[in-house]
Image (cartoon, rainbow, N blue to C red; front, side, top):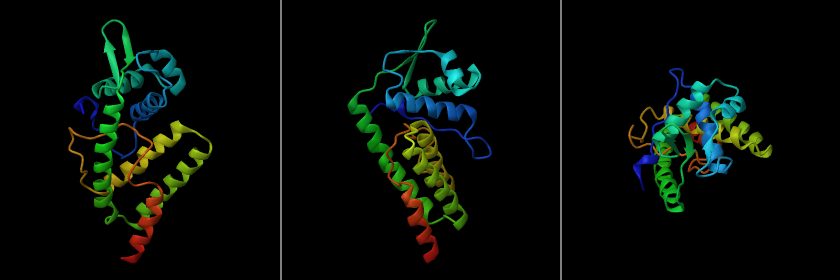
Length: 188
């Protein structure tokens, strides 16, 4: 696996995603779903309209995605979707699975009732997004769900230079895990 796909996510100082984070997640979902085809040129102006933001967060998000190898920057030509092989995707998912499982184990024993309430609310919103087939919203909520756990863990198992963050729909601890965590907290 190439380390080019590994990148630390950023959160605002309030623990909420920034505009750039939200745009990055939306772009990532477009890459995952094929809405932006490998090798295709990315129209920044169109994306700014789609996300209802200025061009600045679009460029910042694309630079982040370029830093992890999902987008390529061609001098004086713009941004292009980078190709990714099936083997690289398998490697990324394998690493992410191991890291997320560890993060969940660390966090679950530290969850309070309030934390579980937050996770349940996110899980419910994910269910609504899934029923509506709103992949963009689902992926944003999925990321929020996991980073809520990571923050609660106080120490992420992800080294700052080695976070596997590909925005996948699959995760080790699912939203149903929030409900199981509530019963675990209640038993304490």
